[in-house]
Amino acid sequence: MIQIEHIQKTFDGKEVLKDISGEFAPGRPNLIIGASGTGKSVLLKCIVGLIQVDQGSVMYDGRDFTNAERDLKTEIRREIGMLFQGAALFDSLTVEQNVMFPLNNLTKMPMAEKLERVNFCLRRVGLENANKKMPSEISGGMKKRVGIARAIVNNSKYLFCDEPNSGLDPQNSIMIDNLIKEITEEYNITTLVVTHDMNSVIEIGDYILFMHKGIKVWEGSKDTIANTGVKELDDFVFANKLMRSMKKE
Amino acid sequence: MKSIGKYFLFLRLLFVNRERFGTYIKRILDECVQIGVNSIFIVAIVSTFIGAVTAVQTAFNLVSPLIKDYVIGTIVRDMTVLELAPTITAIVYAGKVGSNIAGELGTMRITEQIDALEVMGINSASFLVLPKVLAAMLMYPLLVILAAFLSIYGGYLAGTLTNVVTAQEYIYGIRIDFNQFTVYFALIKSVVFSFLITSISSYKGYYTSGGALEVGKSSTSAVTSSCIAILLADYMLAQLLL
Image 1 (tube, chains in turn blue, purple):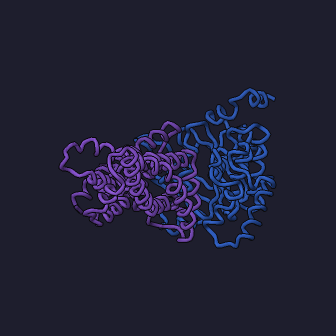
Image 2 (cartoon, chains in turn yellow, cyan):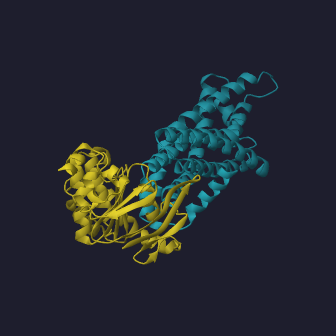
Image 3 (tube, each protein chain N blue to C red):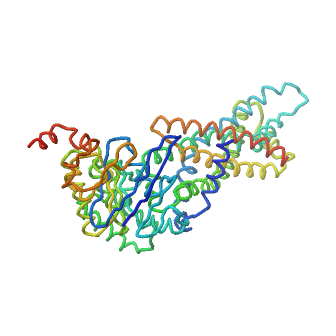
């Protein structure tokens, strides 16, 4: 469980996050949605500690991450896996070395065990035969899957995904969304997904936090998102023709 | 002043919350190849020609019959060991290695690879930069020794092939009144310069923000700042140690 309380962040006098609170439970995908520039990615980076919050706190299973000493922060971070928008694979390493990277640097596992774990994770994301490929030799969808494999290889308790299906075709997007959902449920991980893709909302939106101009406007699930009566959310959800026509039906 | 303060805080980051010692060994060896062995060619070319040009130009300026030809060897030796090998090679090294480091780290920053390391709980500055700094401090003095040898040899080749000095005179010139402290001085300079080049370039690359354009700017800035730092350090070391 991740709890955020009264998060505030200002950049150059501009308030980007205004008093945001929420609870993200394990075993289900938790989505942070909103239009571009609303502060979703900043919130995610505040939660993982890449950006220091001005006020408020982030708790990982009751452990205060915001005010933690360096050792506790490192301990919590080693329980975190993150899929970045561009996958953030290390260019100079093969797919196998990328996935093995956390094991090499954070554990003392024997090589055979590491290889077994890497192969298991690559199989889990459907990339059995890509071990020796370089990141430049694989597609965007495959990079995202390698990113997911790297994020879960260390048995992460928390999984963060920043725009996991940006730049992907609809089929690959759905495949990535479902993979995140399956992994979250299978390993009971606390997963946070930042997205502005309504397909993801429909596909895996078990818990949704909607942000608008740095403020949490609404929270709920995909079952109730269409009938909230919240103008900003309706503008976001029914922005395209297909959604509008579905609403009329 | 703010940048200088941030640079010193960055240096501190390299040593706090370090990874296991074993983690660095392979990375240092890789970096030794990347920024040491791969620089041999350019260093060899530059130093050989600098030595050759120094010999020819010294001969051109020695018009008095009172000055013996062996002085050409002595001048090439002293210029090479004191200044050309450590300092001019450092400028070339800043251009090749400094821009490479800043570009590499800048690209890692804008593609979120550095963030990925941080999220894993790895001290990215220490993990990425410390091996580069240590590898350069190990390899650059060796490159300076090679540069000094090739520069003196370049002077020998140019001098003897153009008949401005005989082989015996040149060798006599490079051996006469030799002060071995100049070699220690060159090695001290090489360690300081390599630290400055790698740490400044890493700092510029590590704090890149934006896109491809900013990576290019960081690379340029890394070379410029490294060159200025080299020249300042060169003057200060000369004042302190000579």
